[in-house]
Length: 418
Length: 80
Image (cartoon, rainbow over all chains, first blue to last red; front, side, top):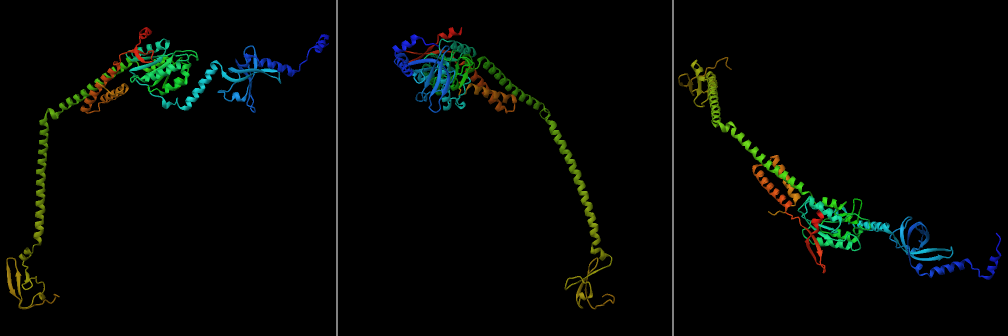
């Protein structure tokens, strides 16, 4: 390319700066600008780099049309409650200056906050983790809802759809239940305060059995009060069981986790807070019928048993029983007679048998046949051989019809008797 | 008639009594006592269902922050 004569001429007349000089000049311009000294910038993070050694963060903030380089030094980023990520929408606070070495202007970030829904989501997760760690969601903390509350506390906006749904459902199910409404703002900066103080106000009523706290559907920002720690703690501290009923089926709030029971919608809360009176009435009616029938059947059965017993022959013809007894006695008596006679006859024959046997052995009958017995009068013993007596001894000879008293004169020994 | 029962307790006692009577495995004295108690429970339960007056009230705060309770007028309109 050919140099223009004009260019050469100009460089002779005007000062030529070094790169550093220009960069410093620009840096001064920027640094002295009031706006750029303290600036909030909203954008999406990209090209995020965390420098391990230095602890500094480098990234780009961008929107649809443009982008800006950013740095967040260690001393600023170490207190961040979250870890920035690519794609995250943030609001950054800091100043803009020039990194003269590279000739780059960039945002020096001093504080960083997640932007919009993302930010709320992070706050939600943080509080949820915190309260969960504290044990506020523990299943053993959950109290049973009363089966049949007499007085229900409602904490909600007195004008929203939620209260209309709640009252409609509750009144339809149980027309005469008592309800106390604690009107509160359910969104905006005062909502959490109002909701939590309403919970403690309703707790001062002795006879409120259960509390429903809720509101209709809305954006996450609108439901936000139910994600605040103050509300969570008020629910946890409530003496009275609490049902949370916030938004729609898919909305989960911190209040839902702390509450004793979560209802997916306000209408559903109305369904679960009280049973249908009509059904209870029917059930009771049915049961009392069964009770009465059961009792009368019982009595009827007893009466039938009694009738049956009365019909029994014992009561109908009691003499039959006596006649039967008499028959038995007569029969026994007959058997007794017969048996006794038999016994006596048998004994008689045994006796006569014994007598004849005894007869045979009687020595008197032997005497009748001519034998005699000789007894030594001195010894009173039967004399069986001659040596049993001495000469001159007196002996008695027993015969069949009397005794002979004799004196021994001589012995006559028989030769063959030895 | 006052009672220390909760509704669901009274009801389950009533159920038990009814079953016993239906089983019939009782002496006459027991049956009479059960029946008497059962009738009492029916009355208690029925009273419990009807005793609330169906009041809808609303808490209001005056300028000094005192809380008072009054009938909720919006109730009937909302229900329509």
